[in-house]
Every structure is written in structure tokens, then in C-alpha cells.
Amino acid sequence: MDELTAGLLESAEWRKATRSGDNGDCIEVAPLRDGRVGLRDSEHPELPAYVVSSSVWAAFIDGAKKGEFDF
Image (cartoon, rainbow, N blue to C red; front, side, top):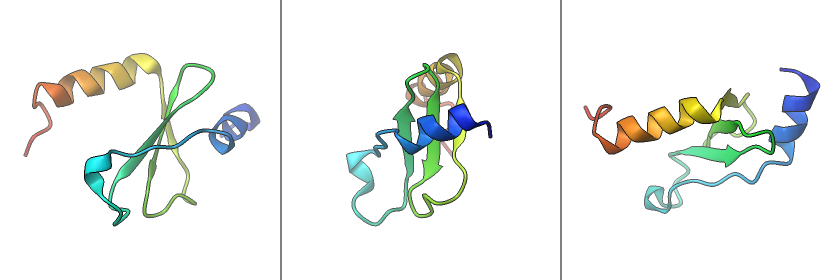
């Protein structure tokens, strides 16, 4: 991870779905100042975050709303 990305993740405002409750069993997301989106495991926020472009995030959200990832 480059220094710029590390800095953006450090100052990111992480959030998770309210539906996940307080058990920490969720993925947190954060919009980054450069337009990308950070993702991390809320149970282990110390682990490296995954960063995607805004277009990848939009495609994921679209697919989730359409039920494409339902098991």
C-alpha cells in the first residue's frame, strides 16, 4: 500500500450498516477523499483494508440491490 492510500485510510470515517448491530460482525466502508472506497472487517480493523474505485463500488451496490449476491 502506498503512503497516500495509507494516509487516506487512517483519516477515513468508517461506517457500517445499522442492521449489523453491535456484535462487530460486519464490513465497514469509508468514502476516501480521492474518490475511492475503503472496505475493512469490523471485527479486525487492524488488518489491511481493501480499496476499490468508485465505479467498482457502484457496480457492487447495484448488484447487491438486484440480489445478485444472495445465497
